[in-house]
Image 1 (tube, rainbow, N blue to C red):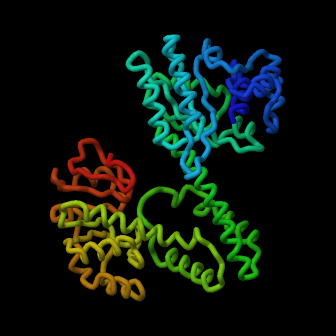
Image 2 (image 1 turned 30 degrees about the vertical axis):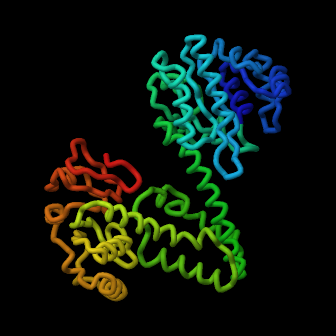
Image 3 (image 1 turned 60 degrees about the vertical axis):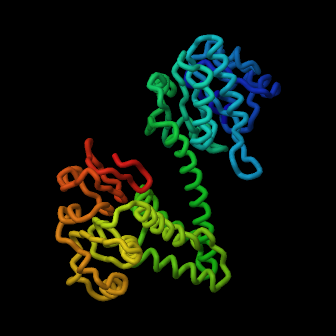
Length: 427
């Protein structure tokens, strides 16, 4: 998408010099012609050429001579084993870093090429080894979200703009890049910025696969999958929304596990292959197992759980991931206590009661009356409920205690216990 970015940046009023090893591309862009087939790009390049805002060269030093910053849009294709071929990216980063040292000029590098965080870590090291202490690193992970076939439209009306950098010197350049374009803008660290692009594309792949697997299931019942998914998409409260898209507790309850099993069993019985749906429960089970193993790797013998039901504001413990964690920890010799302000065993009835008695026959012996008592009695506290900062700060913590946060709580500065979140650092 380098050509598209060059044409659109020139359209915003910037003067752009393109660099490419292909003489044909350099020749075409130098004459205001597009080397790619993409709606509106040809017109934008022609306009930029007429205004003297775009040129091209095969020489990096010429391109950087008067540049305020540079975009890197080289390919990062897959190798045979599926890993990323970062050789082109490294070659370009080395060239730019060398030119920066020769000229003594600080030229920030905005990397559009899609690469995993480890690759960007390596590129930052390449620059650091060359510039030493003479310049700031000046490296910004700046992923593009341009769809082929409508890339210009996506550039001009982006869903979001993401900058990832650790060098504060680069921020002013970010603020001047897109005059007149309004979009949600995130300024973050390089690793986070790099993974955003992968999160996007993996989710897009999941959505396509989900739609097609539902299609297979619909066909097996003689239903029209298009109608099913049209109605599915009417729900913008849960289905098409940010809800359920946060890392955290595994799912449980009386609906999701049961319905997934029902669909998957039907598919197996009718020889319908739906590998993504088939593995959702297994992936969820792995989350539970990993949490248990994280706890077992500590020396803590007394484990406290804040929350036992499968989610907040309910006493439903059916297929609760916390029940499974407690069951496994007790079975492996740990002492476990639980505080759940909504859960009262005397009020459990029906299937909910039956599940609780089966999984935790001594449930009443595990429960404590309040969170203070839980913290006093236990060495490691597993937080499965969102607790506010005030509540957390005023619990009777001991410095040697540990915390495993599964609910993404907000911890204030100076929080005494040590610990971690499920997939995030304890703040």
